[in-house]
Length: 66
Length: 362
Image (cartoon, rainbow over all chains, first blue to last red; front, top):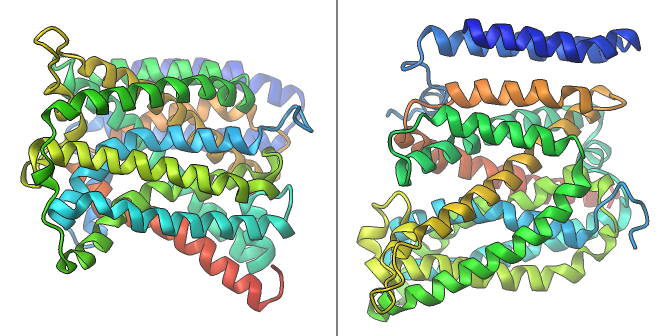
């Protein structure tokens, strides 16, 4: 998780700079939302890599058990 | 010459669609069809291709009126702005799930077939880095690269089918009676769920030239798909029989593993693996382009290039949490992915077309 986070911050700094320079507010918001989603899903996975399963949730949603 | 150098031709779009269907077809269709229609499964593509032709003609009719529009523009125009946006959001979410699913399948398949002790992460990260690098150049280089890939994939596939005929037993495909009609209809669902990707490609409808000639490609495209899917199912069932095929995770690979020519040409399943890697590359790249195009449509963005890397990292994390095992992925494909693909790629365009007719917008 730590390495993902560091790489991700570096990528973010590199990519978001031109957006800030051009004052593309909408693009900066979209970028930030995607970044937050990555942090959320990354945290979910790395906190318990062998338990988390989106497939299981989706199958439970339609009433099917694994 | 293309009218606009930022667009691809309808022929290139059709070839992209065909390569995108390669991997899922080989993975899903034989087992899905064998489980439902048993020895008659090889006849199920007849139903699928008829429905597919209807969908092609439906898009042809839509594009007679809405030339140079995306499918999202068309849906929005016919159903209204809010409903159109909701449909676009559903498509976007679905493409995220599909892409993550195929990224994970790509890694699981390599690990389960030839690299049993290697971490899935290595394959996922390598593939995504190559895709991120390639997609910087956009859709056109991908479409041109795909033309070469299509020729190689098709040639390889049919050579493998010819070689696999040495183990083929025609009695495994018989008997066929009138009682097989209903199971054949049920079995056609698997292939229909994959051919539904055809409709997805109109998300980039504004980047495709000559949409009005969709009708011209309908017959060759349908004939190719018919031969391809029948060969795909037929060779698996003809080699092992339906009872084994419905239990195999990768029936076509198993059929290719059986190929032995004069005891010299053996173990050519690596060709199938190469096949998968190329097809998965085109599939995942195409779906990323489609998803970013919807994002552009939804938020009226000028350019989506700045989001390419971050979106790929997002897909990476989603592919990690999508499943814990290959078994769950298989179950997800059969129970959710195929029905929802049919809903978005076959039923939705048909419903929109009917609404358009009623509201005199088509």
